[in-house]
Amino acid sequence: MYHPNLTSPKELIILLKKHNFNCKKHLGQNFLVDCNILDIIIRALEPQHDDRILEIGTGIGTLSAYLSPHVNKIITIEKDRKLIPLIEENLSAFHNIEIIFEDAMDYDLSGFIKEKNKTTGMSLKIVGNLPYYISIPLIRRVLELGNLIKTAVFLVQKEVGNRLMAIPGEKDYGILSIAAQYYSKPQKIHIVPATVFYPKPKVDSMIIKLKILEKPSVKVNNEKLFFEIVRASFQQRRKRLINALCNYAHVKFNKEAVQNALKELGIDDKLRGENLSPEKFGLLSNAIGEKMNYSPIH
Image (cartoon, rainbow, N blue to C red):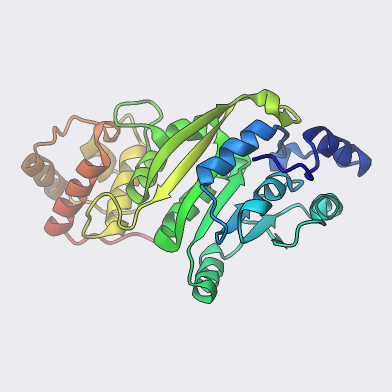
C-alpha cells in the first residue's frame, strides 16, 4: 500500500529538525514513523475510493499522506498550530486533504459530522493516533456519536486498548469496556512497539478497531439510567454492587428497589460491578427503572 511519492519516515524526522520543532510531551506528540504500521492501520480502516475520513490529530501528516490515494476526502483536525509549516510542507502535494486547526476535545464533532453526512449522504469513518491524555474521553465522545459514523480505527496506548477489549472479571474491565461494547464491536488489530514512534514513548501501543453497531448491543429502556448505574458500580469498584449503587452521589437509588431488582434477576448482592456483563447491567437498569423514579442530582 506504500505510495512511492510519499515522504519517507526518515525524511519526516529531518522535517521536524529542519523546522526546529520540539515534540511536546504534554500533548502526547509521538509521531509514527513506520510504513508497515501505517499499512496495518489503513487496512483496518478498509478504505473505499468514495470514503470520507475524519482524522483526529494530524501530527506531521504521515497518516493523511498514506491514506490520501485510497479515499475521496480526508478532513484532519490538529490542535498544535506550530505544526502548520510542517504540515503544509508535507501535505502540499495532496489535494483531497482538508486541515482544521482546532482542539478535537472542544470541537463540535457531532454537529460537524451531521452536516457532512447531510451534505454527502455518507457516513464518515474516523481514524487517529491518539495521545494518551485525550484518548479515553475522545473515544467516549466518538462512541456516543452512534451510527453517525461507520468505523473508527485508533492507535492508542496498549493499556487503553486492553480496557476497550476487557470482559467481566478482568482487572481492566470498567466503564470504557462497557461503553465500547454497548455501542460497537471492538477488535484488537495489532500491538505496536514503542520503537516505531519518534520520539519513542515509554510504553507499547495497540491498534483498535471499533465497528459501530446500527443499534446498541444491549436493549435498555433508559440509556441515561443504564450509564448512571454503570458509573455508580465502578466509581467505588471494590464495594459490593448494592453499596456502590446506594452510596452514589449523582442518583438517589432506593435500596429496597435495588435489592428487589437484584433478587428478581438472580444477581448475588455481594457481587461487585466488575463481575457484571453489559447485558446484566442492561437487565438491572431496566428492573430498577421499573421500580423507582430516579432523579439525577445536577
